[in-house]
Image (cartoon, rainbow, N blue to C red; front, side, top):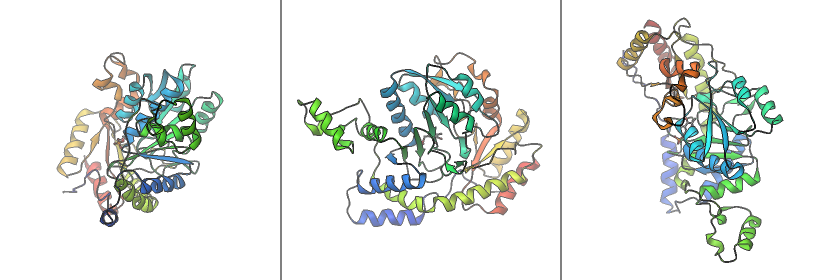
Length: 389
Ligand SMILES: Cc1ncc(COP(=O)(O)O)c(C=O)c1O
């Protein structure tokens, strides 16, 4: 039976495109302008934070967040997960920090909070936590320990828009949080990302880091005047405070984002229901079904084979391929980051053996697309196909 099931479907709708066309017909300015500002304001309102800065990808959000930490703390160590996206580790290394890896909790695929706490030391400058595939990775104990020890939490929420902890949206807990609006995620602006914070100082610095480190990008007149005073030999239009990047996005992305945001909660409710149907109907003897779903909101169905059986795994992959179901092994980031060639020479040989839970997902975990327009019958057919393997 063919299910024809891509990783993502119809994430940008005809309504979004109509809005973009209508906007284009007014012969507007297309580079970052009033629609970017409006999208940032709406996103802040939706998330429950004071400030948001729209950028051209989630990876860019990671990059300038770590660039900011470099500016604040110089060097040191940052705790990161073994199961995450490449840019969460790359941004740490690119900014001169040493990544300290932590294995996952198999019930939510996020860093195990107890292991994070064990690894805290004077050298740790931040905990860079990924809320993996719609799951909440926060616990009371983790938040209170970080607060006590004055270690900042940075949240990567690129895979978890709308997920919550204790009723509050993920991305509103950390000093800074990052989102992605890539096509495969909960909502899309073609490409795009957001950096969010409640700190006015961080907001100003991130605005500059987004645009070449340029001081005139700050929103505060006080900051601009201070730099002008301190640099009388420079024209105020071209004062560069940081060796930074250009990671701005465009008005087109913002127009699409504004429209997408209107439907995000309604779409997320459908995704939550879909995942519940999926997990309820999977055979718990063959697949993991005991995820901690509290507050979760997932654009993916997590399929994790229970026993480390390569022959069974091959059969599952064959069945999915035959049915036209697209999947990604190792979950969204391809599994254990520590195995990737870009970390050769940075981590010890066979370092991956220290992270058995991530190792299991690396070889026996998958994600399959979960989008709002999936029909219950189709989800049941997928479960049936998987249960028959
Ligand atoms: C956890 C996480 N962080 C960052 C990113 C990077 O986002 P983008 O693809 O928008 O660069 C992704 C990507 O999909 C991700 O899953």
